[in-house]
Amino acid sequence: MNEVMDIQQILQTLPHRYPFVMIDRVLEIESGVRIVALKNVTINEPYFVGHFPGVPVMPGVLIIEALAQAAAILTYKTLNLQQGDGTLFYFAGIDGARFKRPVTPGDQLRLEVEMTRVMRGIGKFKTRAMVDGALVAEAELMCAYRNGQENR
Image 1 (cartoon, helix red, strand yellow):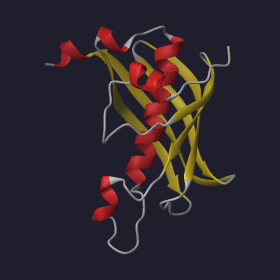
Image 2 (image 1 turned 45 degrees about the vertical axis):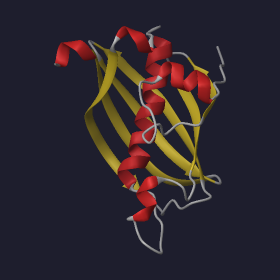
Image 3 (image 1 turned 60 degrees about the vertical axis):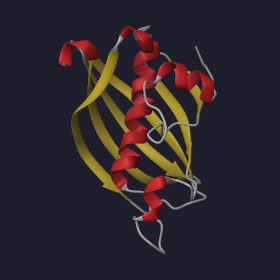
Image 4 (image 1 turned 90 degrees about the vertical axis):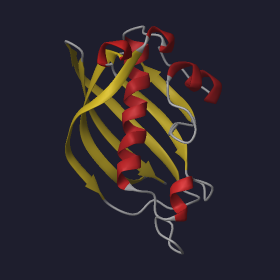
């Protein structure tokens, strides 16, 4: 099923809130297969004040975080999980992360995530971030999903 999500639906799915929501729109979801989402990069992002003054560049770790949030949405939808059930997603591994060019204000990140495996509370994903059709970052992510109450 192809599904489109606006920011309100994203906020109903992800537990993240400002300033850490990295997904603005979902263009498509194929449950259990893939997701395509967008992150609009604006000069108003709080990290641009210090990264770097006069030469704003989106930190690579935040590009990876945006990809992980897209993977979390895909997993929520695939496993029919709800935000209110206490399920949280944590990084379990990041392999082969590569950054091809800087991402700056005005860019729109197209986040493409392919689910390669989900087993025993761990999801594996092949991810890439694009700007204007050009690859800017890629990585293989492993994310663990757990009930947030279990980790206190």
